[in-house]
Length: 158
Image (cartoon, rainbow, N blue to C red):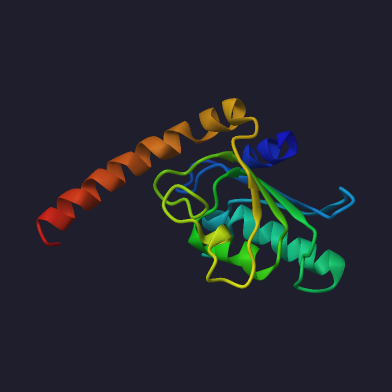
């Protein structure tokens, strides 16, 4: 997790993205891929830490199936990254902090353990959260404001 925290700090401010770092390890603990959120820097709407790390890992193993792999990420993945983890057949997901606004592992949805899907992940949560929570504090404050505005918009029928 500390390596993921280092990657999260790589993000170049200013950015609309939270500082997130992610790593993929194979069953023997060998690092296969790593990434950090970089949508503004790349102009790529899919440049999430987990997706970048999964792409590198798939290249390293020579295929899309990442059976037996573990993904370590500083922030609970959202819907797109959680779906990619399921599709890649990742075995285990290790999370630092929860994302109460967009999290798709437990906070808003539980996509990675949904019994209707063809694969489910083991989830280990709140690893070094005392170090990951401060990383995302500013992001969560902005998201809290956005969530409040969405509630107002819904009440007004906007």
